[in-house]
Length: 207
Image 1 (cartoon, rainbow, N blue to C red):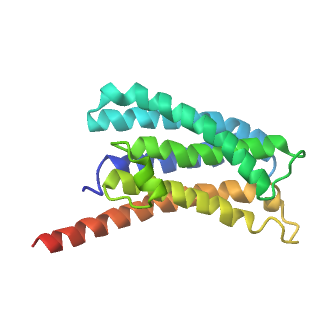
Image 2: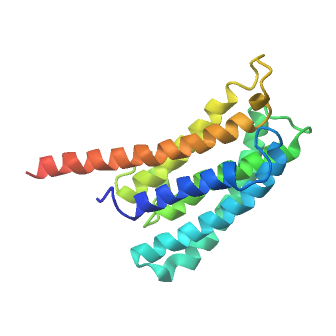
Image 3: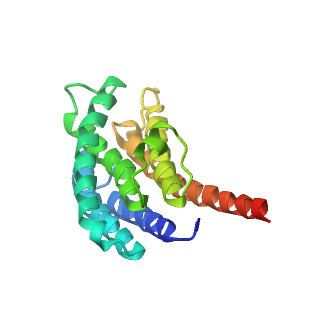
């Protein structure tokens, strides 16, 4: 287990990509026009994370699996976008009004939760990691932490929406987008700490 390996490099690159695509690249501000901003952000993130999946395979020396992994990641992200859109509505997002807002947020959340799994996984362990909640390898820990923290961030961001503060950042889905970005970033840091501690304790046991 190497916490300083490919997973950390890709995770840090993902944080930079997410930040640039969300807050720097769009010509409009997320606070002023979330739909226009996310319309720029989502495609950039989608393409950027596909490139990170390819880069991860190159760094690991598994280029023969790269394009297959990209294909699966695209299919999974598209499917997750539809599922998350429905779940977001069920959790209180407008059903008819602001459909573009909800769809773009679902796509944003899907990219930040699904794509890191394909950037981190070296093997197929979806059931073990996400249903049994028992990641053990570095790649599994990074995939699990990023996905769970991004989803948790999205949920935390929704807490402020119904509060009667009349702030511009309470417009749907601004706070959720920001907290999803923060959640993913925290996930990378948490995975690094988790993997480092696991490595440290495993060394002590072997001594």
